[in-house]
Image 1 (tube, helix red, strand yellow):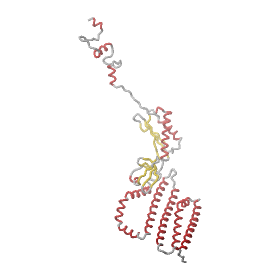
Image 2: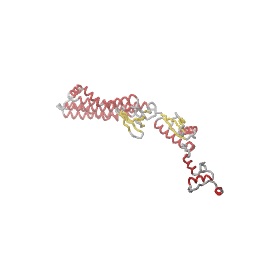
Image 3: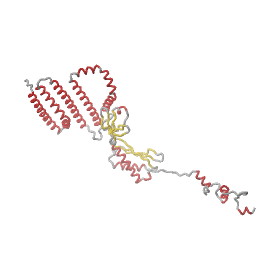
Image 4: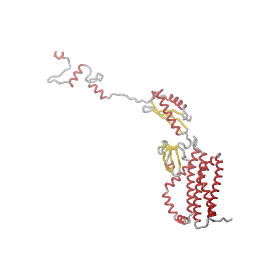
Length: 397
């Protein structure tokens, strides 16, 4: 059956295509809304793919109506090319939306809001990397398909292939850093060295892996800063991963105390402190004397917790409670600085010359000592001398 090609037929076909598109989308939306009541993936599909699917269906139906009813003319090839470009672009958008639906299904199945989430973090990292890689591939293919719709694209492709050697060398040198980061990102995703929500120490900073892309990794620092590192950092430099296998950690609390401390009483108090908190996971509780030099006794306490934030809170809690106990019940254990006062020798000689009774010097002892001292300190008489004998004996001579 031949369809008359006229503008009236084109208008009727266009309206019919619009009505059919609305009817189909309404029926499909009703079906998926009913399914979304029991299935999470249907709800995600409606949210992600509703708009691109409606536009894609409308463009395809309008293209069919236009191709069947529009009058022949020189502009028809241009119209067909425009519809083809729109169909390719909307098809790429729809494929990306479906990829996001698959990603949502995987992420909803493997959640990271639980203590033992190592497998979930690994799957989440791989899904995020694959999603970005799929997006790039779909967009590149769509752009390539759109370029091939132009008549001169084949000639351009032939010239590019003829100079492929030079172009590849130039592109390789220009994109060496970018390509290395891309391959490093893929290596991170599938080597399981680091995952989303891992606790790491990088550049001396404690933080969590917040995002992993094809070219860089975002680390959420503990004070809400973000450190952006290239993907090659995690493949070429050492870093600490505190949740590589499990999230449980062992931490220490150290004290420098006086020699009169009693470690046995501290152990009893440590047991009471840990029994009052839920931060401790009841795996390790140790109190040891690790050193006793320099006038102090070093006490080290080892405790464990389910993850790094909980361990930090537990260490602060144990430290605070133990300090309060030492101040309250064992003040003799508080560190003290002892000073041994020794009198210098110069002060002793000064006291001796000054006639100190305890000095035992030359001018000390009896009345004669005062006379001998006057020979050095008193006036000297001309033509005579001063004797230390009594005056009665001098007068008798």
